[in-house]
Structure formats: C-alpha cells, structure tokens
Length: 550
Image 1 (cartoon, one colour):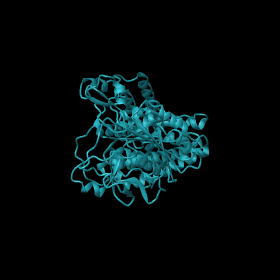
Image 2 (cartoon, rainbow, N blue to C red; image 1 turned 180 degrees about the vertical axis):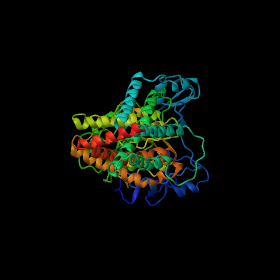
Image 3 (cartoon, rainbow, N blue to C red; image 1 turned 180 degrees about the horizontal axis):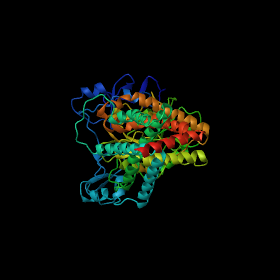
Image 4 (cartoon, one colour; image 1 turned 90 degrees about the horizontal axis):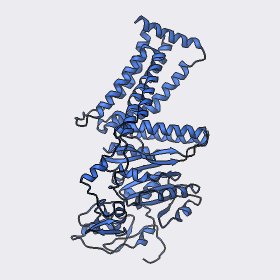
C-alpha cells in the first residue's frame, strides 16, 4: 500500500472483493481478519478465495465505534483454516501449527499434552473434571459454628423474645432462597410485581413496630426498636445464607482440568496516565501461564509516557493510542482489534498471578457462562486504611461473592480482572458510557440476557487501593454514584420475574446493602448507644418484663 497521508474520512482498510477503500459510512463485514463491503458479499453467488490481507493495513486505528460495525455471518464466505484436534478452535494463517498422526494442532496445544492427544469425550476427560476435594475443611466448620453461636447469643441477650422472632424469620428467608434455587423446571408466572423478598423486607418494620407498641412501649421507642429488630432479621438471613453456602462453595473448588479447553483470549488494558505502573502490569500479564492470548493496551489520551512504555513491548503487545474518552470508550476501542473468543479486562494498576488467566478460562467450559469475576486482593497494605480495605475485599469475595456464585448470579465483574464471552458482550452493546460503573452495568446486562455470571477464586489479581482518607472518600463516592446510576437504569430487574435470580435475590440484595443496612446501622448508633444509660436500662428492662409475663 502506498504511503499516502492518512485521511480521517476513510478507515485505511480495503475490501477484498472489489479492492476499493472502505469508508466509515459503509457497512462492512469482517471474516478471518479480512474486510468486505456488505454489498460485495451479498452479490457473490459462489465462494472464492481472496488474497491474503496486508498486515500493514491493521497498523492504522479504526475510529468508528464498535456498535456501527456490522458483523453478519454469510454462507457465501467460508471460514479458512483447519480445526485444532486438541482445542477444536480454528488454526488461523498467522498461528503456528504442528502436524502429528495426520492431525493438526496449535503449537501451544501440542506442547501441553505431548504426543498423546486426550479424547475430550472419553474417560480421560471425565477423570480430570472429577478431580475435586471430597471433604470440607474442618477449620471452616469450626469457624462457621462459632459465628452462629455468637449470633444466637448476641440476639438472645439483646432483645429477648423479639430476637427469637427475628431469628425465625431470618432462617425462613434463608431456606426459601436455598430451596428455590434448586427448582429449575418450574413455570414462570407473568406478573409485574416485586419479589416476595421485597414484600417481606418492607412489611417487617410495620409488623415489628406493631408488636413492640402492643407490648407497652411508647411510639418514640417502638419505631427505633422495630427498625433494630428489622436489621437483626436481615443480619440473620444474610448469615444463614452466606456463611453455609460460602463454606459449601469452598469445598467445591477445583484445580486444573488438564488444560483441555484452550480458546484464544484477548486481554485489554485501558490506561490513562499510568506510566508508573503500566510496565509492571504488562510484565505480569506476559508472565502468566496461558499462551493462546493477545495483549492490547489502550492509551486513552494519556499526557505522560504511558503509550511510549507500552510500545516498548510492540513485539508481544499491541499498543494503541486514542483521544481521551473514558474507560468504557477505551474498552470498546480495544474490542475493535480483539480476535479472541474471551475478552479479559485488566486495570492498568493490577498485577496478575501466574495462573490468573488460565483459571478464568477454565470457568468458561460451560456455554451458559457469560462472564466471570477474578479474585481481587489489595497489594499495598501499608497503613490501617489499606489494611481495612484488604479485609473488606476478603470478606466481600470469600463470603458475599461465593454465595452468589452458588446461584450463578454474581452482580459485579470487576474491571480490575473480569472476563466476558465476546459474542455475549457484543449482543448487549458492549460497555456503556452512561454510568460511572461500566463493569456493574455490563454484568447486570449479561444476567438479564439469561447468562450465568460466576467468580473464580483461583484467578488472583493484586490492585492498588487508596492509602488516604481523601482518596478513599473520592473512590467510594464515585462507586456509590455509579452503583446508584446502574440500579436506576436497571430498575425493571425488581419487577420482572423473567430475570430469575437477579429478580429474586441479587437486585434486592444490592438495594438492601446500599440503603437498608446503613440506615438500620444509623438507628442502632443513635438509639441503642446513647449517652443516657437510663434509656438503655428502660428498653432492656421493659423487654425482659414483657417476655417474663408471656
């Protein structure tokens, strides 16, 4: 191709059928890294071979958004290449291959299993997939038992008879969700009403308030005490659900499957002014044990040397520069160049563990899985702020997310390390720029489309957390605003039973964690911990007196 000055009105790509240049206004089709006019493909009556595409054509960035690129499968275009006998993926022209016993393999696939291919439908595969722990760690049982004993004792000493009612309701809600999750073959009722969980949660304060008022308390004490018992019920419900299921999920953790699943993966790293950390991030990705991958670093209009540092790895990393448009824009820009079946998003300040990518890939064995979340840990534990955040990450992932993984409804695939199937991501319109939490938004859209979203504990990544109160406040303010925007955007999830677990559990749980829990905690802090000890004595004595008369 002649080295003419680049015209912003054209894409720099040429149709392989008519050999004319493709402009942004024209609809195009991409097949096997080759571009065609949509009209040229439709006019073809018989498939024919085209010349190989010049690699220099891909050096110029495509400035059109992913939504306007139409990738329509057409029977007149036959996919080139031979299937790998190991991973069953197409061997493209730019991939090295090995031929053994009249079969072709990717070089990486051939190195994994040697000269003895594994029959994916035979006994060897069954033995690998069934290699999982058979018993639960007794230490986890002891910790779980201790948590329950402490909860029961605290509730008994705190509010006596009403506590038992709170415990009973909490246990009932917990068993309802666990039993209901196993009912897969049931008819879905068409009704535009909130889930039963929402009804029960909203009506509990009224019921508890009436009971407390009937027992002889004044209105001033009835309302806060009802809210306290309400929060206590939700606490018991969450612990009755989260703790046992997180222990159960821990016992089901599996290791490798023998690497029999080996799809091509695209790792996208959006970066803005990250010259201090981008090198370490790239090095950690290159050091991962999964080899069928491509690394795409998107410099989102950085004003420092981020792009120059990423370009130093041009033989192993595709570094692209674009005008600043935000993280969702950078991710969508990277999707234009991504060739993998699985898209993995990694933040520019995240360090990956060696097995992080391979562990994520293993989770996509089932076609129902649309997205997976990695295990994020804090690596800069230097002061009490970062150490508290490290504990928060552990509690949120090891307990909260493990439980939702049991229901295949993890609500957030984090941007620090998250994976999506490319075709499912494109069907939901890629990443949206209308919220500050594009990862939360994309995850809910994946769940609403009927796909499962899980979490992989073995896929570990280490990220930087705010190390000052000011940075922490700004981060959480941005997160909270973004979460609020997403919850409002997807408010139909609370009214439509077609969304399954998202409708029954995940969406109400997010509402509860953002509003109910902080509100009930504030009430406890104001009314249960006042400076006047006489109020506490009055509440406690009245509660005990009521219980004794009953």
